[in-house]
Amino acid sequence: MAEKMLKFIKVERSMPSKRDASDRKDDFNEIYAEFSKDKAGEQAARCSQCGVPFCQQGCPLSNNIPDWLKLAAEDRLEEAYQVSSATNNMPEICGRICPQDRLCEGICTIEQSGHGTVTIGSIEKYITDNAWEQGWVKPITPPRERAQSAGIIGAGPAGLAAAEQLRRKGYQVTVYDAYDRGGGLLVYGIPGFKLEKDVVERRIKRLEDSGIRFEFNTRVGETVSLSTLRDQHDTILIATGVYAAKDLKCPGSGAKGVFPALEYLTASNRKNFGDDVPAYDGGTLNADGKRVVVIGGGDTAMDCVRTAIRQGAKSVSCVYRRDRANMPGSQREVTNAEEEGVTFEWLASPDAILDTKAGKLKAVRASRMKLGEPDASGRQSPVKTGETFDIKADMVIKALGFDPEDLPELFGEETLTVNRWGAVRVDYATMETSLPGVYAAGDIVRGASLVVWAIKDGRDAAEAMHKAMRAQERASKVAAE
Ligand SMILES: Cc1cc2nc3c(=O)[nH]c(=O)nc-3n(C[C@H](O)[C@H](O)[C@H](O)COP(=O)(O)OP(=O)(O)OC[C@H]3O[C@@H](n4cnc5c(N)ncnc54)[C@H](O)[C@@H]3O)c2cc1C
Ligand code: SF4
Image (cartoon, rainbow, N blue to C red; front, side, top):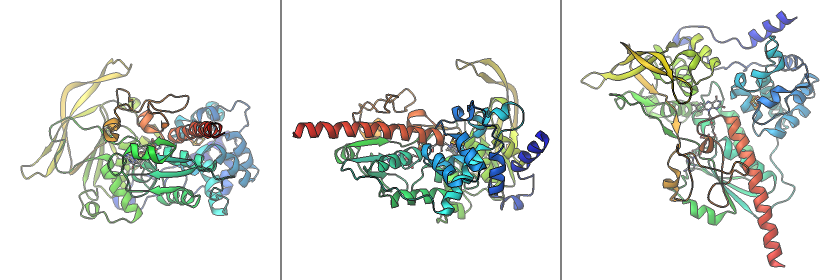
């Protein structure tokens, strides 16, 4: 029986095999794309209802996983959807892109006992995709309208989750975003082969249909000031994410043909939307036929290498200064990338990007590294061995992570307190910042993190904003009496 189960899981998780670049171009489906009702039910029934729901503890939203697995196994899919959506504003998105191996599935009791995890994420995705198909996902109709309003800066998962929670309680909600559409990194960071764009778009549409106003192309701090928004609304949420890309500090880092990861991924994601992207169409931000070198070892780097493969790159290499065991990205993503044909240069650090006199990219010169003594964080520091080597390159992508932008400067609010990395400081009991009535959530508080944590923060902040607005309302009633 156990063997049968393992075989089933293996099929479910099977990845595209190594193939030609031309074949890879069409390979846009991620692992759970074909998850059917029968398979969802079969997997859900594997949950042993162990009584110690470690999976729930592994989920940042404390999703009631055993209950919706049981309901799904009994084919009570509408109830499963109700339970699943009670704690999560976008279950089908988390089901697709949470690193489940590090969260709920990693500590599933069945996984721990060696029989392979229940594929929680895929079932969560199936339940809500099915709910959309059946018409069970409806716009929000609050029990009563309230006059008070909330201004939310940032339409990423933190801002969207907070907007939804506040609208449910009847507040008037406006979301301001610098981009031309909602979703934040859900639309412009995470590639379409992991998260289809229409899945995010239908969520935004539902919020619009629920009475939430979106003001796009509005960069707070430039288009409109924070103080104007504070005057207009009873409460404000800062959910602006982190967008200052860490740069490569070596000669040639600014050479023609060297791009920051988000610029590259955004171009590709815009193409997925059908937007006009001259830099992609003209070949500049398109890996087709090129030898691509991606520098970095996190999930963003994995998204870049896998996007380049899908664009038909001639070859794709990933250069990371530590070894595989010490890379920050998900091991599952590395396995995916390897199976798709990416070459990993572990223990390698770039010394220079080389180009010709005419400015044409030639190669990345890198040093071989070894792991030395642990640093202050306890991780072994990479040190040069003295050996160098070149990797031929026509395109180099820098995927070294992100820092917060200087928000006190951008917002002209010196009293907005940030930590030494520039992340906004909050009182974790309320998510309130140093500015009264101004809250913060998501990556701008945690530093680059995960969608599921952004949703959790957005929900927590919304709850605190609601409590504060109720207190304000009561106080003004008392004052009026
Ligand atoms: C390439 C990439 C891949 C990722 N893959 C995954 C994954 O597979 N799984 C996962 O869980 N996480 C992933 N993440 C991380 C995840 O996307 C983030 O943790 C999450 O999106 C953070 O949500 P947020 O709402 O805080 O910020 P964001 O999603 O960044 O949204 C912030 C929004 O604020 C807007 N904004 C910024 N400044 C202003 C301003 N001044 N005025 C108005 N609007 C502003 C932005 O335009 C943006 O829309 C990935 C990140 C990247 C970069
Ligand atoms: S939200 Fe993420 S961590 Fe929580 S149950 Fe879903 S996939 Fe697992």
